[in-house]
Length: 290
Image 1: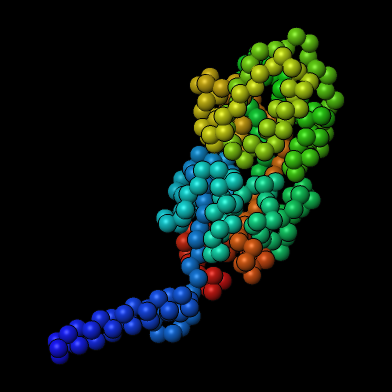
Image 2 (image 1 turned 180 degrees about the vertical axis):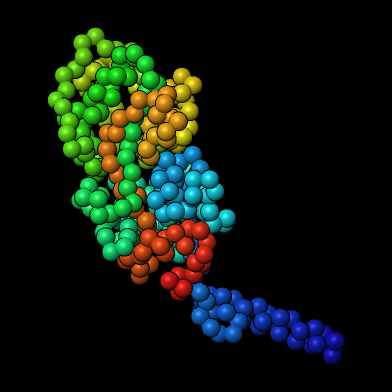
């Protein structure tokens, strides 16, 4: 009987200890009763992403040779996925296309400058990049040429503006080319998907004899596809590199800011570019240390 009581007492103590641990974890305090620090979840894009390439360069997370991104950063494969991760994680920080920001995430002001179209166009918001379409130098694909001509003309730029992106300063009128039909293939940046689908839709209203196939697989992958003739047009959300310009003819068709985003429940509204760099390099790990 004594042994049974002792066993029950021991089980009771164990249950009480477990209950205590769960209580402390749920209350956001450590075993000593102190408030826990909130560890930052860093969200970044895959290496082939043009958005990541531009962000890493602008935020000095790479020196051109070595990438210093935090080793435990969560890597996602698209603009929408980056925003989705931040949306569900109160301690997350990531980056996405400014044109894709919704009310489900909060875009931070950088160095005191709000992330918005007018500030990108004026140059005061520094984290921005071009959207580029490119063809292999010397290509005479008539439908590809006409589609690019449409994208960079007045009706194409109206689509760009309605999609929430920044248009070119000067653009010509567009007259449909007669007899241009067939199929054109594009591949590249996921960041341009929102606007490119609208451009495709509008162009097919004008040219019903055309067929457009698009693969959103990342800027670098799209450029590689174009160079190897797997696609007719590459889509990039970064400037073409010097060696790429030797083989490709690129045209900028829009400008876009890169918004640094946090969960709406985060009290932070602005941050310095220096702090952004430290967070993404893993040098700052807790929100309380900002």
